Amino acid sequence: NAGVTQTPKFQVLKTGQSMTLQCAQDMNHEYMSWYRQDPGMGLRLIHYSVGAGITDQGEVPNGYNVSRSTTEDFPLRLLSAAPSQTSVYFCASSSYFLGDTQYFGPGTRLTVL
Amino acid sequence: AQTVTQSQPEMSVQEAETVTLSCTYDTSESDYYLFWYKQPPSRQMILVIRQEAYKQQNATENRFSVNFQKAAKSFSLKISDSQLGDAAMYFCAYPQGGSEKLVFGKGTKLTVNP
Image (cartoon, rainbow over all chains, first blue to last red):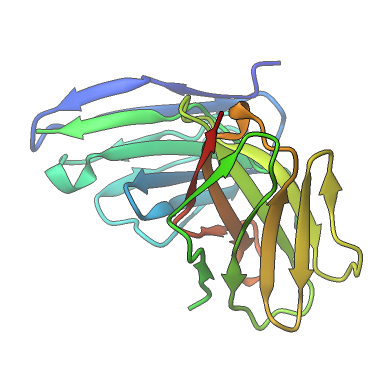
C-alpha cells in the first residue's frame, strides 16, 4: 500500500514550457485534490475531483488543468509555465466522507525560470 | 470567505516543556471538522489531530491535545512534553462549506530547543 505518490519530486522548467505533475493513490479514494504551498501562504487549493470524470476549480486554478479518467490518477497540467508558478505542489486524497483524513503525497518542488 | 488564522508565525519551546499554538477560524456552519497538520523538514504533511465540532470533548492524541472553543471559533493545539522531533511547521485547517476542500492557515513554525 503506497498511499499517495507524486512524480517528479523536483522539476525545473523554463517560462512557457508545459508539463504534467503526476499523482496516484491506491486507497480507492473518491476525493482527490491539488494544493500549492508558497512561503508564508500555507496551502491553497488549485483543483479537486470528487470522482472519475468530475473536476472543479479551487481557490487558485488559473494556469492549471486537471482531468480524472480513473479513480487512481489525478494529473495536474501546467499549460505554459510562468515564474509565479514556482512552488511546492501537493496532491491529496480522501474518502468522500466529511471529516475523513486527507492523505498527502510527498510533494513536487517546481521552479520556473 | 471562510478563513483560518494562525497568529503566531513562529514559536519556540524547551524540550520537555509544553507549548500551545493558536488558531481561529470563521464559519457559518454548525457541524464541521477541524484539523491540525504537521509538516517536518521532510515536507510530508502529517495529520496530528482532528476535532468534530459537535463533540464537547476536546480531542487528544498522546502528547497532543486541543482546546476547542466553538463559540469563540478557536482551535488551539497543545503539545506536552515537547520533543526534538516535534520541530516542524504546524497548519490548522478547516473544510470549506461542509466539503472536503481544506482551507489552511499560514502556519506556525515550531522550534524545540534542547
